[in-house]
Amino acid sequence: MDWNHLYTNFDGRISRQPFWIGTLVLWAASIALSILAGIIVGSASTAMMLIQLVIGLAFLVPSLAVAVKRFHDRDKSGWWVLIIFIPLIGFIWYLVELGFLPGT
Image 1: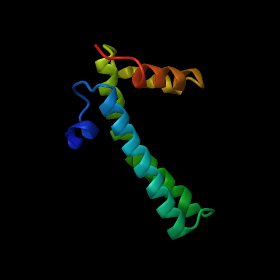
Image 2: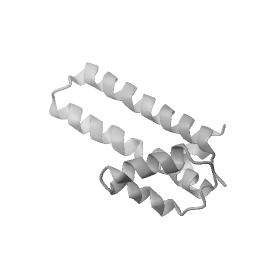
Image 3: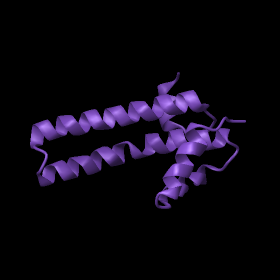
């Protein structure tokens, strides 16, 4: 698997397996960095909130790249990632559409 292509390029398609692997790697790295930052600066400080914001922004583009490629595999536009902003229903739709339905 080409990790650079998976996380930085918005072109192409990926099947369910690379989607789950890419998503779980991003999720695990985000949690690990958050725990490390909590140990270093303390969990109740303003600096921790700033670090969490930086971590979230750093993982935004890679997660969008993975999701857009998966939507392409489902024959949908990459703009479908915006469905996540619909409360509750958007997350369920996103999870089912990208995580469980087969590509074309």
